[in-house]
Length: 147
Image 1 (cartoon, helix red, strand yellow):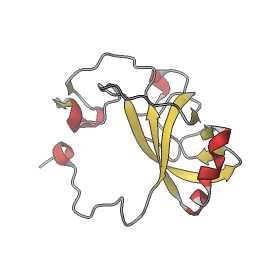
Image 2: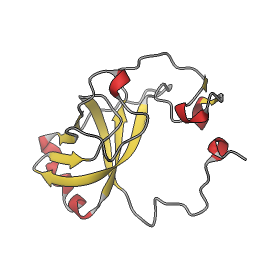
Image 3: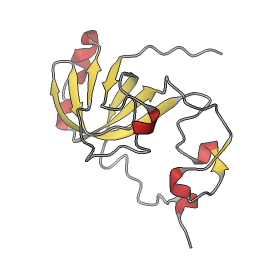
């Protein structure tokens, strides 16, 4: 089965090379971060401005390395883990997800906090981040927890 996605907009960041992109979103990052939504979808933003945070889904369109099933995450201190036990951007289906602060909406432009993608990354979807639904009290840190 083939699955076809069409970008609904573009994510703009100050990052122009993979080396510039942080490993996770940085709410304190310097520079201009915004989403330019396709104009025909602006009505879908109705009341999104009532949320502090949004979940941004994007297509990682410029991989810098091939997919591997074992990776060494930056926060793992050299530990090897399976790809699906990591947040590595090098995936069989290169879809990314970041939760960022929504700083404002003006027309088809959404101003956001620092996101961990290259400039001109294709936007796939936006969803609101719900305080009560998106935080799980019994979540843990898996392999990141050190005894």
